[in-house]
Image 1 (cartoon, rainbow, N blue to C red):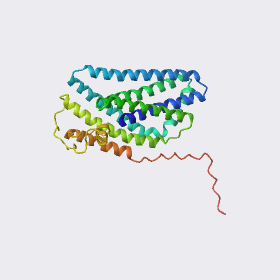
Image 2 (image 1 turned 180 degrees about the vertical axis):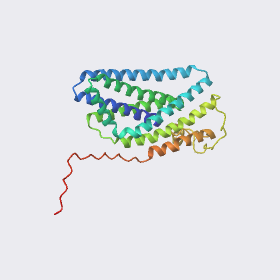
Image 3 (image 1 turned 60 degrees about the vertical axis):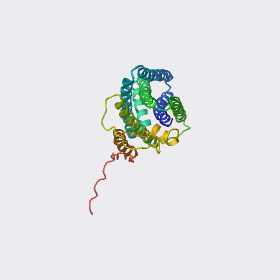
Image 4 (image 1 turned 135 degrees about the vertical axis):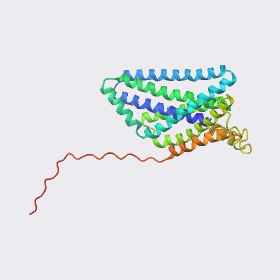
Amino acid sequence: MIPTLVIGLREGLEAALIVGIIAAFLGRNGRRDALRQMWIGVAAAVVLCLLIGVGLVTLSQELPQQAQEGLETVIGLFAVVMVTFMIVWMSKHSRYMKRDLEGAASDALARGSAGALVAMAFLAVLREGFETSVFLVSVLQNSGSVATGAIGAVLGILIAVAIGYGIYRGGVKLNMARFFKITGLVLVLVAAGLVMTALRTAHEAGWLNVGQATAVDLTWLVRPGTVLESLFTGVLGWQSRPAVIEAIGWLVYAVPMLCYVAWPRRRKAPAAKKSTEPAPAPVDAA
């Protein structure tokens, strides 16, 4: 439940923030016509993402067992690539996202193109929704309880919508850089678990046969039905007897990504403005 809740919260809040910033900008500029179009675009993007998720699940269930493992491997690796790109992008841009979006919106309105803002909101929701669909499908396919994972995802999205609305109305203040850093660290661990799962399903699909010896025996720690078992398997992706290649994959992904996300970033100092006043005339020596 924890991984899916974090996924829903993180991805949902990104989309909610982008839509909220654009909606507030259109409202301040009296463009209610564009605001209605924007909500239609947002709804269309949500429906399209739901169809993608349902299609992936249906396709996976209709395939033979070995082909299912292969598809799960592809979906898992694709989810890892997408979440890695998203983590890196947000680490660089979260601090200035509101400023950059309002600048782009102002330029679009100055050119008389409200359609560009509608497209911006549609594509933002589509991108985050597509990432969420693929990521959740990959996590839920390897979850002990699909119902619990789905509840976690819905709760995360609802919390994200509530926070986004609160920020839109001005009643909620959120340190964006800190929020995305903390959730980024959690998502790195979830993505590292997906790496392990993808390597496991690749072996079950007959694609990977090296490094299948047991790396470490964690049966004494990862016991079924315990909190530690939920933490290790649900969040970290570790099974009780992981293979060598799975442990290597987890470490190769998690260690550098955790260092990257946790590394402190300095704020860029504003460029010094050049003085436009004329230089004082030299004073002759007496």
